[in-house]
Image (cartoon, rainbow over all chains, first blue to last red; front, side):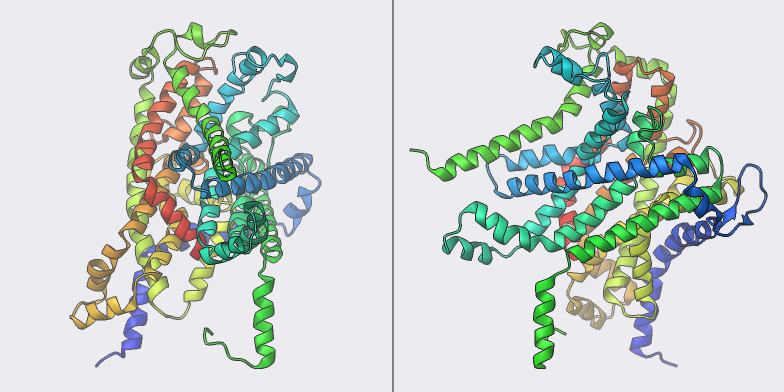
Length: 313
Length: 279
């Protein structure tokens, strides 16, 4: 008996996929379904032997829970401040690095280096820098710039605690987005930039008219990544302020974690986790829609109307 | 006379230099704090450089903080096994996605796409329940297994992109020479995607070395805690007034990732760039 080549190749495909897929299904696929089920149950892991179905109760109770509403608001505030500043700053740095001035290699290394510092340690380092009494930031403000009125108890005042967490997150996450944008910049064909130069456009015009509109793909990749980083912010507030002062830096992820592993309310925690997941998916979809490639669609639809069969398809 | 272009380039360089310096401040300040005597750490008079190099904080790690070495050992063990298996599985799965056609492949790929976007706490809850029923909480294995899985999606996308760049003719040629599927993969294809493998190794290592949420939940005593979690407990014990020792432990725990990153930066950046375009 001889198997056909096609069938043999399919078997090989499954065989190569098997070890990885088994792990992914066991540690992500099964948990994905399990916590979806748990989100519709009452299940306190410390007291209940079995989860008890309760319908949509968890999802409804959420919106009556003032801690949840606080953490939802704080996550929204963080996202609204962090997302645009991360996108804009990393795009600017990528554009500057793309100019290829002397020393760019060293500057790149400096900016990328923060990526490899564990987030929890980043938190401790910045806790020290933001320290009210002996911190570097307050000392520099008073003793070098003479701006005593600018000093704050950075992590002890609600508004400034959130600000500090945003600064830390920018320091830690910028490198990744700079690399993403650099990839997009490297992908723009040189000839269109050359053509613009020959037509007499200066470098600012080239940047705004040619380079930025041609980065659509990067906006999608960077956007999705930045959305995930914003909505699931956790370690920075957990390590630096533990949600405080009060609930001013309590975010959704930490509230989920607290419910699950401090109070063992697995059902309620799963529901909040899924709530977060849905928000990420909605924001990603909006981002994808906003950056969809309109020009290509027009060309394609024109081709279809004229009945031209493209060879690529 | 200076040309306009030269002036512009000078300013670009100046801005970049300032940003880079700003980015380095936390590193420099941590390092400086770790070699200062306590009187110079806790002072209201700003002084950047220590008056003399003091290594007492490093010494006190060795004499007082026994658990530091436990954390360090756990980080090394957990990182080593997670990275090893993650690379193997990412290579085979990425190869399968890139070079084979079979029923259900689209579903597999869609699944990998979906799990990467959702917050990982969703998986953590059932994993915690599962592991506490199997008595796997607070073991190194209990961290390694989830880490292999949670790092797979990113690594698979990088590897799939790499395999897409390998021409099919190469595999055909190997097959005509009589190699079976496994030999084709291990002897012909893998050597071509070496740089992709390097990227996956660095990425996974950096992620696992710094992972906090899973480690904080699935390990509860210094017996199995990793550095990223353990040091936050050291901070709580020290009542936050031991910044000298704390910064010294941070510096020591950063050395492995820094060495890997600085020596393999090229692969790191190139690999992510390739993934960002094809992904």
